[in-house]
Length: 291
Ligand SMILES: N[C@@H](CCC(=O)N[C@@H](CS)C(=O)NCC(=O)O)C(=O)O
Image (cartoon, rainbow, N blue to C red; front, side):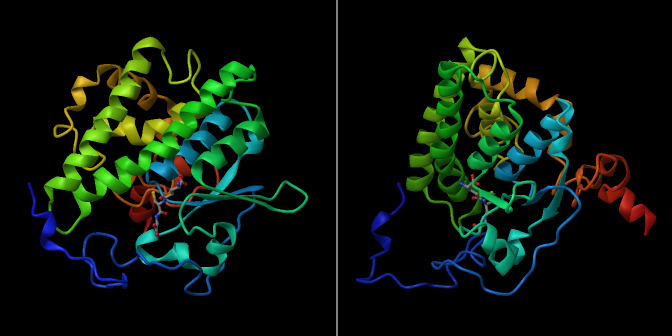
């Protein structure tokens, strides 16, 4: 066990700007904008401001799935918000998401522009707007929304809890890693038992519940998230692995994962997306070769 008595909390907590760890430079105990920064706007009604993290990928996959299903009204412009540089604290972004986190969407097709923040709310907004990837039958819809909200409540234990202490904290401490590994493995068992019964999370059909859960608990089966596949014995969750692989091979998922990606192989990075042709013409390998 780690020595949990090493830190004696003071009577009143104060902000130590040098607390260390990845992301310490952007974490703050106060909300609101830090600087003036307008958001760019493209030609389509839907404007997405995001980054290809698990929460961002949910939305770009949904938009690419809608387009693949023939919903041409889902054409969108996607701009990168570099959270490592503090873009989420710019005045324009804070105006569309007072919580300063990606993803955030603005729909200009409504009488007044509609802002939507929180990835779950964005998935639900788009599913209702286009009548897609959300069952109409009340019971099936309730099952889908239950799993959608399961993700929203569960993933902070995976990302903010396990991922933070396993991959990002300035030192490895057994107590928080044990606590969150146990909870994440319990969650994975919940998902694995469900996927032993059904092809997709909400039943026979692929829905926004899969789109929300897959970038977190699916990608965890590879080493792409926190490099923890071996540590968490991900191969044991064989129904999750089967479901991960099936969804990973969908064309819209392959495309959606590239949008707003600023790390990894250059051919997988499409920083801004304005048109379907951008996947062929404007990935970073193409742009850098043309320079
Ligand atoms: N519950 C939110 C979480 C969004 C979130 O945590 N976004 C992260 C990136 S994955 C972010 O923008 N972090 C920047 C920051 O915390 O300053 C959602 O599902 O949209």
